[in-house]
Length: 223
Image 1 (cartoon, rainbow, N blue to C red):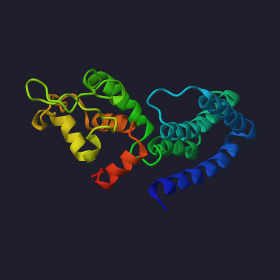
Image 2: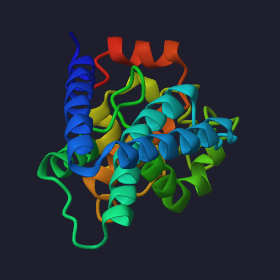
Image 3: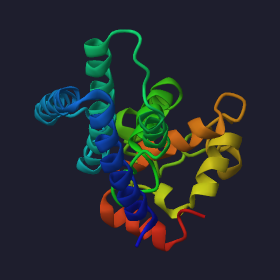
Image 4: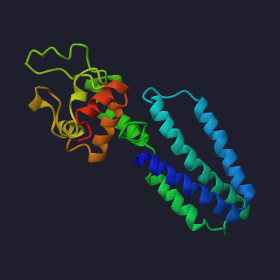
């Protein structure tokens, strides 16, 4: 069993136990209304148009994360409104909320999570889009040297050579800059944290096709 599957199985087991305990603590009506409210919200999400960078893998992982959080947040909300301010949230439910927050589902088949892609899109918009363009497309003549002998910003969407490099090299290039590789990209080590660096990588990798991503993995991509 893969780690992701094991984590999903454990979460579902914990969820069932805590739903039962929530029923005993808050009552069937409050839990049922929490589930109904989550279902309505989830249906609305599924029918809403996706943002530009959200692939089907991204939406699936994001949906499951929201399903889990909605069920329990809405159950607790209805319970508090029913019983007044004196009621206390049970310890098992509180523990479950912590576990759900810490164990976000990854984008299917990828190393990153939807929240990393979301953060990465913000980082990309602040620091990268001016050179690498929207959707990490780069420029069409990225193989042709500039007048000063440097290379233009390449595409990062899987159509150039970014997928030839493992995660460690991609991170190092962002942190230290691309001048040593013949480009003009300045170092971002003093501007981006390690989490932001990984997030922006997850953002442009989310544009990669499955074939490109699998090719990257075979070359030792996650090293």
